[in-house]
Image 1: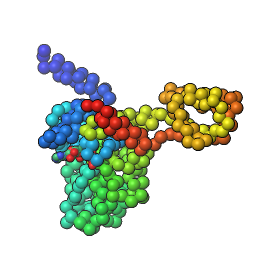
Image 2: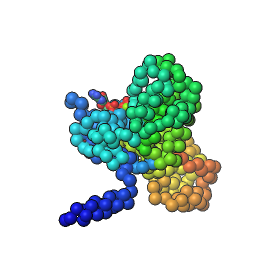
Image 3: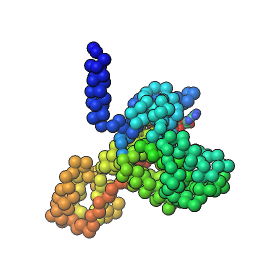
Image 4: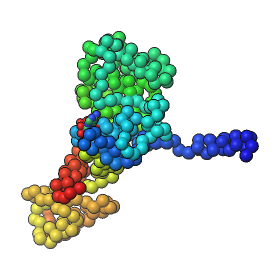
Amino acid sequence: MSTVDSGAGVQAAADLVAGLPPAPAAWCTGLRKQYRRHLAVEDVSLQVGRGEIVGLLGPNGAGKTTVIKMLLGLVRPDAGEAMLLGQRSADPAARARVGYLPELFRYQPWLTAAEVLALHARLSGAGVPAAEQRDCLALVGLAGRGDDRVGGFSKGMQQRLGLAVALVGRPEFVVLDEPTSALDPLGRADARDIVLELRSRGVAVLLNSHLIGEVERVCDRVVVLDRGRVAASGTLAELLGQREVRLHLTDLSPAAQQRLAALGRVDREGEWSTVALSADDDGTAVPDLVRDLVSLGALVHAVEPVRISLEERLLGILRDGAASRAAGPS
Ligand SMILES: Nc1ncnc2c1ncn2[C@@H]1O[C@H](COP(=O)(O)OP(=O)(O)OP(=O)(O)O)[C@@H](O)[C@H]1O
Ligand SMILES: [Mg+2]
């Protein structure tokens, strides 16, 4: 093949690649990490799409921070592969467009907030001007505190600065490992707004938080880790899909009780019955039920839809895991 031909070939290949959708913000498969005899992470595969907000949930010690560090190339996996924005995580260059708020961090106490931010802006290589750095401090609620030393900052102020550091390098992917553990309710609301603003700009976010309500409000998808493994994952709709309905009923004849039971498992507490609806219900199950109960002589005082919260679902997943471990050898 002549040089001209191969040049054209390379260009054609480059055009082909340029036409492909961008690589996911983060991707990993079969990640495993063992610390001495303790298996911290086993066979974890997950993906964070561009512009997607993914929540990473699980109890203390589940392996969340270890997975994050392997994704970021900060901890070497014993097995598996990880990619960041289309590059192998092990390559430090892969982190250039990634913002990271670590779980336990401390900035040099003798530096001012503005100096810490300037340092990280320089490290990111993004050439962020001073005015943009100041905007970044204002975004996290530290306007006017740029000249104060970090050593004198409260816990929450340090966490706000950590968030600014994660955002200052114009990242395409932001990883937040418990970003709001020290924040007051206003600070948490601010952090939530910041995450939603990132999504609107197409920036992907991986968010690890024990504040489940927060995850439920902002995340598109959730991955639950338990004892180092993925115990569940899916969109919120998929994970919370099981709906229930609560009915206040009296004059319930045996035939009406049978009709109720035909729908699914019934939990009765006095005059209230809670029934789980099937996942493929097309919206007719409840009106049909009420019509039939009335025709069977029952008095229907109230019908309330119940949607389980992510917190309840999470507890269910973790308890099911514990029960199946207790039931037999894994
Ligand atoms: N550097 C390390 N050396 C030894 N063991 C470690 C190390 N890092 C993590 N581990 C162990 O790996 C397991 C997972 O830890 P990890 O920090 O990933 O959990 P986590 O899910 O982030 O928990 P938390 O919610 O408490 O932050 C734990 O049992 C922990 O003790
Ligand atoms: Mg952790």
